[in-house]
Length: 395
Image (cartoon, rainbow, N blue to C red; front, side):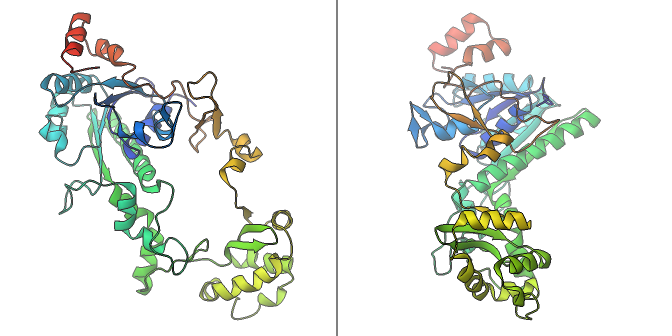
């Protein structure tokens, strides 16, 4: 991928998943990312399970194209180091609770006074204002608070979290978009700016369809498993040896599916003739379709729906995903040579720019691997570096 952000420097005080995903994206686009970690073990995500060959798989996933610097920002000298970094940088990112950066002397006003071109961005659990601004937050907390858990799972199930860190990664994406927009604004005005987002705001955004449905009808969303609350038939259907997902998302596709299944009479049946009527009778429609699909294996139906031009696919386990020829063709999983975790693959971004994906220049860093190099970049001499290390300010 062209290094669109080549020449830009990001100072990254974020940890866990949301903020690091944002800064990794900036690194993928060519920025130099200096990840500032605390001396006592660094980013919490370094200890997320599973640990393989001494490395957290989660850390490796969200921290490529970065350089790790160990600085104790609880000490005055450590905060001075970070201010010197920020004075030379283009972007400063943190995931401290609202007001936390200001208490440390690392707030926007302070850093922008030294570097007016700085893009200052932050991510929090509940946002910069409001009665819950001071509370910490994690992805499942935002899933619960935003209402997402109440529509996840099957009818009768208790509230369920979405297994993937959807809100964390979404917050990182939104923050990255905000940084890119601020960089464009800086190009026009010569001045930086402040960007912030929160897990709760992203959770509300991701819950847009369910919220819109409730606002339009007054009906709370139901749990519908693999099915859609707004389209039918649009879910997994049982086959002789498993399941296949079929997405007949409009009347034309529904007619094709009915012809394929020998259920042509449903097309003109007023109970199923429109999408709205099909959604209202989703369960009985599923039963009708499954009476046919259970007669043959999933591979048979996959072949048939693809021949008919009906969207659908297998319900894959991850061992099948990693060696899938389509995934391989898209270059989504990059094999690593001579990496410290044998067999590890880097998960690329789902974006192509001029036919290329992310520019993976640096593997996820070891803890404190680049401290000395970053200190020299900030203008510290060797004797100062040695003194700061001996006093525990850096490691």
